Image (cartoon, rainbow, N blue to C red; front, side, top):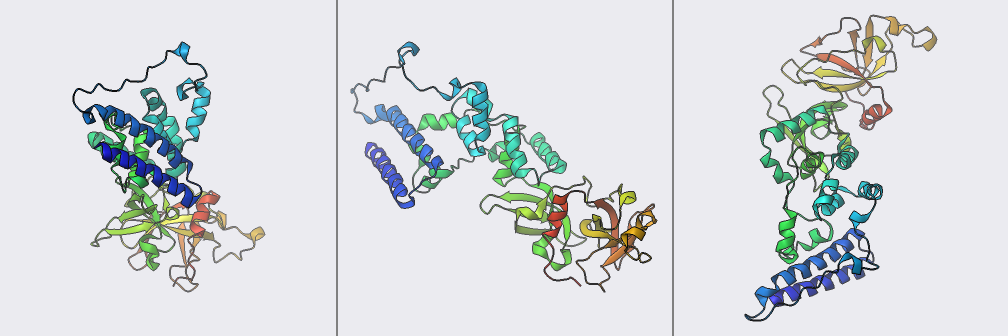
Length: 388
């Protein structure tokens, strides 16, 4: 056993030095983890030393802890920093850094798991793809099975240098019993923002969102956005999507969905319900919109991108245009060719409900796009060829 420990530590040291020589610059997090691993190794080694020594051999004396008055020139600990300085440091740490620092002691744990710190990380990474529907799904999950949520957080996987090294050596054994015991003293509160962040990051939590150009950009879904349940794939930094069945069709599953094809639903409406439009009186030629459309009444709605056009009675000259005063609104879908039956439709401004037929499909509610980001998200998906 002693020979194994000494050999392991020697291998770690040589291995780390070889990495430094090979890559010239090892990431700072790896260097910090290596120093942590060294300390934990000697801590665990000293703890298990009595079991390795022959019977009757007195244990080596423990180092005497100096009282505060004897400690001169000793560096301050993190907890000795002013609260404002410590908070500034914690705000700069990435999520993995907060998790590592939060395992040091109870005081740091309370700070490193605060909703304020994790709320910023949640908004920065996930804010564009999670909405009220995703939050309701999370609340439903933690209320129905609060104990099962721990599987998202205590996976036992290390990142950085420890994660790389764990492919070759039993890290948990090297770190020692006391380190393993300290790492699992208190589980994360399931209702905290940190728990929600880690659940999303784990890839085991499915939540509702919307996907642009579903099913790998199938030509029948170009310039559309459909509701789906998605989960994150941390290995590829993409998503998996499960689409609700269309009529008798089975559930469609798509993998490798990129971040730019995901969005939180801008309107909190079921895909089977008609959205009540509240923007019809404000629509004018040139406005960007998205409109609900479904093939037949058994299918869920998807959102389709279009632009408000000029009526046939208007010559398109801005100074003479009165289209915004008409009871009808022309909607152009310029992704389709001029002769396509999908190129244009007209809806009533005052009495608009679901309109259409079994041949051309049914048009539902309209949502006006008001921000440059929303319009840009659609334009980035513009097809390279005109659709028929």
